[in-house]
Image 1 (cartoon, rainbow, N blue to C red):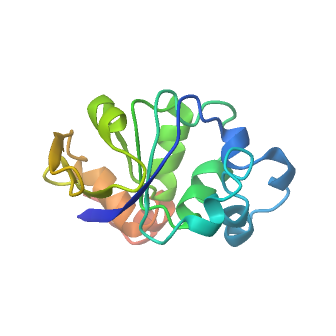
Image 2 (cartoon, helix red, strand yellow):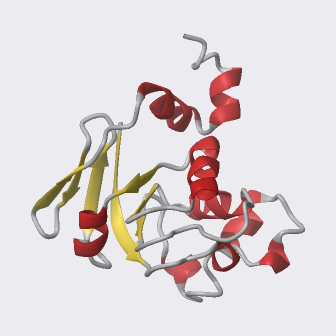
Length: 165
């Protein structure tokens, strides 16, 4: 299981309030959430993100509230993966639960640039930067996390019986 896309890069301490501002939390409509994703930190994001793009950020990504709306907005905007130095614990779990792959890698976070062509293989445990011709070793996802991501989220994985074993 792998993803490949162009990088959209952010800095440190990107909190859930800028991922999806509180004024939009009165809806659970995924497309509405996606249409406002990152608008308080980057008004151009929704117009330049393409399906399959990869978000890269610095430290403490997803800090702030525990709202599931934030990873939903990112996933529904078209982002296929988020790479950061580290994630807020609740954001990390919410992301996996809704089927958004996220990877912690200090080296990749620091060296990958906006616009780079990146590929991540979740089974082999590698991120390949095709633009810079670099590779970063990561911890492969355990089977149960790969199953959750493949199913599109935890509820879908349970409903499909993918976590029964």
